[in-house]
Length: 387
Image (cartoon, rainbow, N blue to C red; front, top):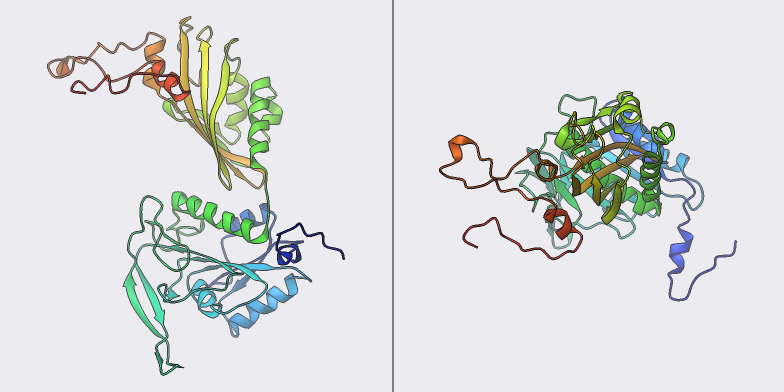
């Protein structure tokens, strides 16, 4: 087999040609959360489950890896609880075909201030509330003693993301053990989604997988814009779309009725312009400028409000999540007070009676907010009296 290598490009990079991305999932019991396994398979991974219970645990994990992989193929391990701890502890030395270990709430971890992992194996650890064992292996005159595990309270991570200051990437979630498993009572959908995005990023990077989620998002927008509702509704099962300020949208089969009866028609002169786009591993965040004349009813924006003939200019933020090549949910946000002000349904001087002695006018803005988002010069802090 001939391998073409560009100048200054590492040859080893070309030897790591992955035909099938293999993932071993492991936890304590014989059965495991089917939805988690299905989510991995929907993303294109070949998945095998290995329970911790039984003899020769690590031998069974490695035997499974050998059966799954062919020549020049690699694998990753996603472990939970005690299984995650054992996998982390066992692989501190090089395993050439193991490209990633992802550990969900391991019961213990190797000393995070001293241990590092091989460069060919990416590590990601998701930590839950509670205590965590820190396993240390003391050395005396170069001789390694028996491992000692010390329990420590899991501290909060830095910032909103919860990243820990360890020698390997780790994140703390304000949720109990079990938060990532839908079949457990302690399942936390918010923490699970955040951890899933990080897990998927590590797996795709480890296997060199590239997925064009931008195309999926833009085709969905185009289908809605042109009224091809049938094609637009090729979404994930139980997909949900929520226009948050008005709580309009739908879940699952409700979306067909919503899009066919309440989303269209749109104003004839509606103009949409993308201001910014942030692309993550499984979601896209768009900042979109909309301007139009309110010449017909728009149920998702102004439910049951007749046309006011007023011009409107706003910025909406759309967050689209994509799973298994399909849109699983979209959440859309905008400044509803600005919309009501622009169509004449809200007056900034109409202060509730009980606040009139304290407040001169409501702190809301009209189209100025949208104009400054697209780069127009506007005066700032005009609502702050002492500025």
